[in-house]
Image (cartoon, rainbow, N blue to C red; front, side, top):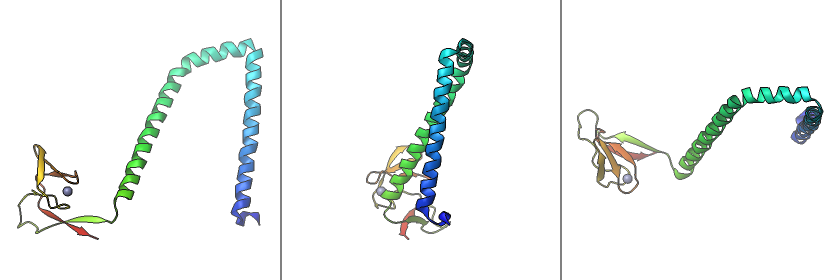
Length: 141
Ligand SMILES: [Zn+2]
């Protein structure tokens, strides 16, 4: 009957986490105490650590890198969601009969600046275009 209430669930979960924390701290303290008083364990740990630390360093490096990528990805997505006030789609004006390539920004209707071979950029909104793109116009959905 307590399962229906989220607050009871939450407090049960919190209680479980607290109990686990107590057990973990107790075990860690016991292990550390054993380490301090057991020379065999000290020797074993120093051997194990010297062979294991490069693996741990690599794992930590991968973890930090993955976290960084994830944060950047989340921020980028968030900025994209916040910056986009309304959904915008581009429709091609004319199909195969209009082979005129893009020369002005379909969002700002301003001439595009050529950055490099085949790459154009709008001076106003900084969007990038390929010069091989056909002319397009913006349709607000
Ligand atoms: Zn533009």
